[in-house]
Length: 294
Image (cartoon, rainbow, N blue to C red; front, top):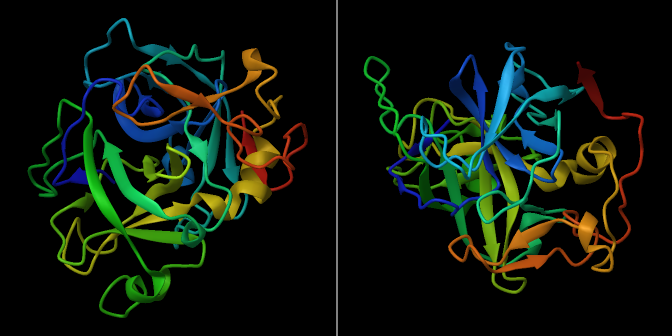
């Protein structure tokens, strides 16, 4: 999936966005959730075993001083991922060495409560995929695209003339009723990020997953994996490591930007590093809800 009807983003505007590349070609997107872990879609990783992760990338083929390249050493796909129905379309990528955080490379905070419980003011999708959905003549943008979208209630998205019953409780829909702007082919695994005015930061709300009939069509919004549905059962269990509980251990804490356009202003996530819940400190080394792919 990718962004139809979007616009060029500025360098560093979405510092948690990464390009997942296979044989030097962009294939999918992902989001930085810590210096060692990337969150993406499970269907991205089914058919390829030779990947690299490019962080800090704003132009598809332009690697600058702000770019960092890492290589996966482990894929963890949700063990109940269903390729046919695209259920549980979520996966973790473990990097071979930690990312060095800069103004252009930062982790995003993970939402661990229901989307309806947060008064998000703005939601955006981002991606490097096609900007024209014509199958015979796809157009790929040179610059990372961004577009603002609306969260669409499941009661609307599940209508028979929309996406129907294929939308499960662990999925989200985002786009516009009239179409024209939305996700499309080429940007699977990328972030649906929403801004909280109260906490002054973006949260990773969804992972770009699928579209039903075509891209950005009326009554046919893109569907995303709902990140909060997998926080306890998959993410915090499998993304093992040491996360800071407060700001006393700044060397081990992750940061989340106040606003994507304010590159030099950042706040430390106040509780468990990237995980905004004081009761969760991931330290489990065994996997309970995923399968490892070395």
